[in-house]
Image 1 (spheres, helix red, strand yellow):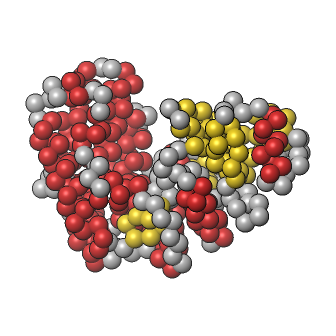
Image 2: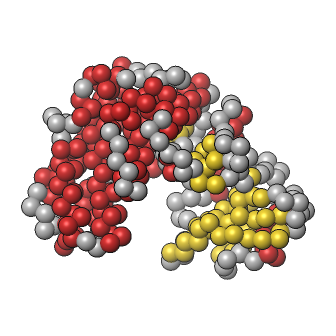
Image 3: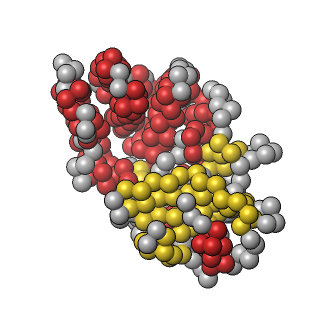
Length: 335
């Protein structure tokens, strides 16, 4: 936990002179020489701010600056994003924490987790995402980082990486090799078409789970830690499927086709698919449907170690299978 002395020093570095009266920890992750901590500082003037302290090998100060610049650009275009604090033109400062030199950012505190989730939430989510992609096409930003694309292009996106550490349990499934093959073949197809897809700066981790709501009911987008330069179609389908299976983790099951109709209606208010996106929709949809479904099953198994949970992983075969995938239908992919 950060102490009040360091908290006030960070505030002073950002030009804020208020005293800290309380510190709440949102996240404290320490791994080897890397760390990521998120704190809420309650100030003496009743203002609240969120402080992120990080030291991660893949996230330089320059990258964090670019991600915050993108966040502020979206805010200037009217997308609800918490204000990032800036000092002398910089959104990220360097400070020592736990005997390590760390990157530190500060933003306004706007509210609590968004939990009033329903089917119409997908319309709102699609609308936010469509507007973000429209802004990135109209006013390009280069962040210089891509989580999904680099993973695919560099050959790191392999199905076997999903179950690292539980190989023995997974390999008891008779058809796991077929599922692996379907996933890895889709990744290869996406790698070939990736450069031809429209792309730009994106949030990179947007979904039902990365929104918070204010006291007056406004919903804000948070956590730009994975913001980068990605294909819009990949970002869109990651957003949709990660949200679908986040529902499933909470034991809330909804009709995927119905949710998609809400989602794409909102998205198309700001941005329509290009021809190449329509042509390649099924491939990318099948990949991310199967991927996020598989991740949710593996997470469920890791949470409770119930061997019967892994049996559900067999259903990933139909999700990765282009011949059987639900979104091969033209009406669904074109909205």
